[in-house]
Length: 316
Length: 316
Image (tube, rainbow over all chains, first blue to last red; front, side, top):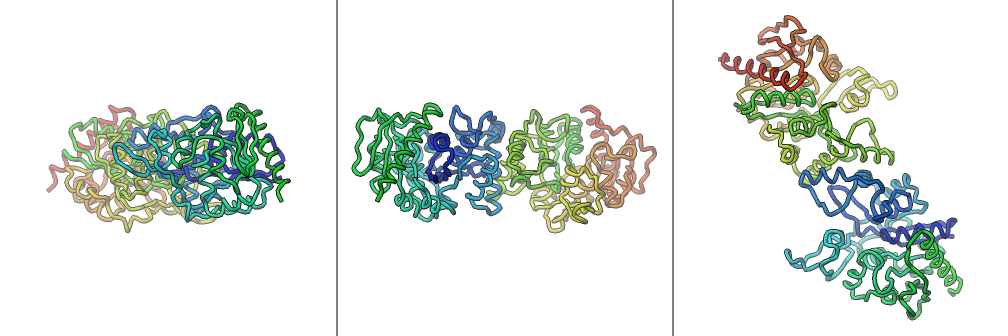
C-alpha cells in the first residue's frame, strides 16, 4: 500500500510514527512543509523537515518534540558572546551539524530535495521524505508591531520570538505562487492509494503545502482523510488558533474541515470532545484524537487509514 | 612606542603575549598570516589569526596552543555521523561559532580585516590584529603522493593530515602575487618604531606574509629584529625543518637568518645552544630562547625589543 502524508512539524511527525506502527508494510511518502524554513547565521534551517527526520529516525528530543536528544548549546552561547543573534531560535550543537551539511550542499548546487535525501541516508526515517518544493517559499506574517508599525515578519519570528502574541493580520506563503512541487511529489500523490493529513497546522503547515501550484489538484484527485488538529475547540499544541483567526476561520474541528473544503477532503476524524460534527459532503468520524502515547497515536493513524480505504472503495 | 610583529600561529602568539608583558605601554600591531586559511564545511577558518586572538584574549587551550579552552566536539562528531569530513582538522564547538560569524560576515561583503576587527571586539587581545591581506592566499605544498602521484595539496592537508610525512617538493603561497596588503598594514609598518619577527615558521608564516607585494619592502625599510625558531638545530615546535628543507634552507639559526637576508633583518636572537652564530651584516645576540613560561617569554621579547631599539639608534 502506498500512502502520502502532508506534514508540518511536531504533530505531523508524531502522527507519522503512529502511521508506521499502524501500517508497517506501507510505503509512506511524506511531503514536508518548507514554509517555516529560515536562514540563521548564514545556515539554512528546515525545522519541519528536520522534526520529521529526527522523530522517525530516533534522534528527536522526545520531551520538547523538536531538536535533538542529548543536545548542548555551546555554539549558540558562543555566537551570543560575539553579539550575534537571534537568540530566540533554539539551535543546538547537534542540530547545527545538520544545517552546516545542508548549507554546504545547497551552496554546492544540490537541490533541497537531494539534500534532504542525503541527510535521511543517515537517519533512515523509514519514509520517503520530500520537501514540498525545491524553490524558496517563506511564510510571512503581517502584524501591527507597536514599535515598528505594520510590517511583514518571518513566520518563525512571529511564532517563536513573539509566540504569536501580536495578532496576525494576514499570513502568506511568499514565493508559493512561483514555486514548483519538488521532483517526485506529484507522482507520489498520483500513485498513492490514499492521502492523509496528519493533525498539523491547517494554515502554516498543510495550507502552505497545498499552496504550491499543482499539489492541491493532485491531492484532491485522490482519496483524502484528515485528522483534526483541533480538539474541544482548541489546538492540541502550538497556536493554530492564532493562524486560523488570521485567515478568518473559527477554531473548531468543523470549521477546519470546511476550510479544507469539499472536493479536497473525503474523510475527517474529529475528537469525541467535539460532539456531533457534520460537514456536508465529508465523512466525519469521531474517536479519541489525543496522541498521548505511541499506541494511542497508532490507533488514530489506523483509524484514518481505515476510513480512507473505506472511502476509496466507495469512490466511483 | 609602536611595534609591529608579523605572526604565524602558536609560537607567534606566545611570543606576543610575552611582548605585551615586556612592553605593556606599547601599541602593538600584529600582521597575521592567512596563508593557512582553509574552507571547511563551507566555513572560513583562519587558524593563525584565531590562535593569536584566542591566546591574547584569554580563550586559548593553553596545553595544545590552538583552539579554545574547555572545548567540546559535538558538531564535528555529528558531521562525521553524516559522513561529512574532513575529520583530521580539529574544529571544536566553541571554535565553530567563530567560523560561523566570520563566514556570515564575509558572505555579507565584509573584508577579512573588518571581520577580524569585529571578532576582536569580543576578545580584546590588546593588540591591533590585521590579516596580511584581504585577498585569498592559500599556501600549497607539492608532494609525491604514493596514491595520486605528484600533486599540490593545501598546506593544512600536508601539515595536519599528513603531519609533513611526505617531503614537500615545493611550497608556494598561491595568490600572493596578486594580493594586496590589508588596509592599515603598510601604514602600521611604516609608522612603527621597530618590527619584530616572533619565532614563527620562517617559510609558511613569516615567509608568506613577506610574499605579499609591498610588505617586504616596508618591513625592510624599518629596524627589524627576529627571534630564531630554530634552537639547537631543530624547530622548537612544529615541523619548520620540513618547510626549510623544501626551500633549500638548512635547519639552523644561522641559515634562517641568511634566508631572511641582509637588508631585511637587522638583528637576530639565537639560543645559546646554537653556539657562536655569525651572519654578515646582521647583529646576532645569543640568549636562552625557550618560551618555557610567561616570564621566560617576556624576557625573550624584551631582549628582542631592546636589540631593535639599540640598532634603531645606531641606524644612520
